[in-house]
Figure 1 (cartoon, rainbow over the protein chains, first blue to last red):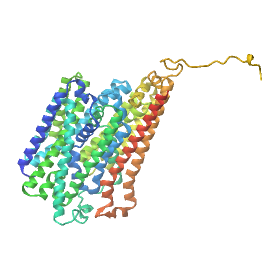
Figure 2: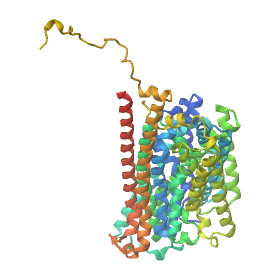
Figure 3: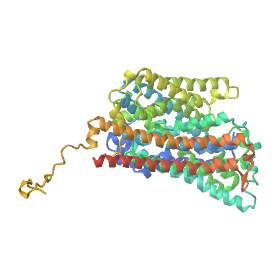
Figure 4: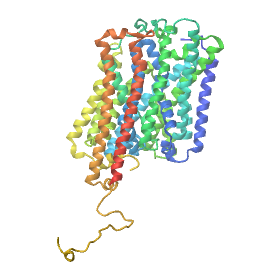
Amino acid sequence: MTFPELNPVVGYVSLVMVAVSTVLIGIYGLRISRTTGDFYVASRTVRPWWNASAIGGEYLSAASFLGVAGLILLSGVDALWFPIGYTAGYLMLLLFVAAPLRRSGAYTIPDFAEARLESRNVRRITSLLVIAVGWLYIVPQLHGAALTVRITTGLPSWVGSVAVVVVVCLSVITGGMRSITFVQAFQYWLKLTALAVPIVFILVQLTGTGESITNDGAVFAPELNTTADATLYQNISLVIALLFGTLGLPHVLVRFYTNPDGASARRTTLLVLGLLSMFYLFPTLYGLLGRIHTPDLAVRGAADATVLLLPSRIFDGVGGDILSAFVTAGAFAAFLSTTSGLVVSLAGVVSQDFFRASVSGFRWAAIVSALIPLGFALLTDTLALAGSVSMVFAFTASTICPLLVLGIWWRGLTDAGAIAGMVSGAVLCGGSILIAAGLGMDQAPQWLQLPALWTVPAAFAVTITVSRLTANRRPMNTSRVLARLHTPDAV
Amino acid sequence: MTEPEDRPARVRVTAPHSAAGPAGTYPVSREMAEQSDVGELFVRSLIRSQLRLAVVVASGFLVILVGIPILFSIFPAVTTWSVATIPAPWLLLGLGIYPLVIGCAVLYVRSAGRIEQRFRDLVDDQ
């Protein structure tokens, strides 16, 4: 699969520039990272604006940058549920988790679980789940990087995955969370610019030709879709997965610990919602225009490349090269920022549970956390990016979400209930997805492909039932911990 | 009218002007720190109000969100309406949802802040 309209030099230049600037900002961060607290959570002193940009930078992954436009190309209006779910997930995070989690004073989700339930076993199971979620989420990022490098430079796919892992390891082990915050905040704005500048030029150019940008509405026609229309079940189950999966994602949660207090955690989330809403307009526009200008990608199985190829389809020569450089740089920034966010949060968990919680332990843990998913990514094939990411959301929503929500709001939660809920959620959701994958995505029934609609309520129900049955195991410190989670910071 | 000499001498009653706080009252912040029943009661009611607020905002949002595809499947005619060649489903899902999300978030942040302020006032009053 070659794309002669892309100039490989442009690809090389933009990839190298993003990689170098990421490492440089990481090194700048190193000069101000001094303590273990700096490494883990930037000593909890990051301002809401920085933090919101950093959360946006970290969250907008390959699935958002490339995958949303690719899905709009393939399935039209149904694809719009993805960005809605990704954004509204932060609303649920704000409502149920943000401020109390910040006040919990824990570094990671397993820390929170242990502090709340006074149980080493809950901690261990939570750690395993967090690590599994993180790895599953890194794999599609590396696939996205492989796709981008292959299409923009013509190099073999593995180069992209390896390059991302190398740059991430370099920037994480040099600066930890403090420098990552700068890198992520920078990358949000890089990604936004990378999509906004080319689309403005493209829209101006298309308006100049005098034709209707939407081809008099033809661009919206469902006949352009290459996939079947989604059913009501599929849309609702997807939205449930995305809404409740966001509040369990380890790299999202660790960011909330870097806010100075609970109220600023809320302000940060509000800003994030604004930043995400603004961002998702752009992939939507790329996907829409792609339905007229890059329809061949759907047939060639490269729908995720819509964003990368659209500028060169509209502009010839140097203009096309420059605009392609923008989107390529943005895409690479997307893999880098999400992967490094995940690696940092995983390293926090791995180093506390398996290494001494020290700076050098954190560095080793970061390398381990990045290399294992690299192995998976090199051994597996690329799926549609947005689709594979949504499975991770479904898994998180069925496992970590009940633990967090019930742990924060319900006195009755016990360690046995939490373990039963997490294990049954993991088995039900993971099992369904594996069976669906085994049957082949076309044959598998919808309730196995998109299980969130029934596995999330099931996990909550199991957690609550088992907690009720084991009410004598309620931890002694429940009242004290809940008071700490919910009392306003100044009191 | 009784004779003036029968009347007891008038005594002025005042509190001592000292730096120490009045005896007998107990700040809520200390009640909470010591996990007394009163502190526990305040925190429980704080948690209940915050949870009620979160659940109300979340269910309002979910009803509207899930309502959109249900609306489209019950009244397919709606999907053919369009503004400036853009069909209604694209407008609603691509643009319209985002102000709703942000609106819900602003509403929640304000109300949650107000609940906490009330809690703080309560603590300071004591």
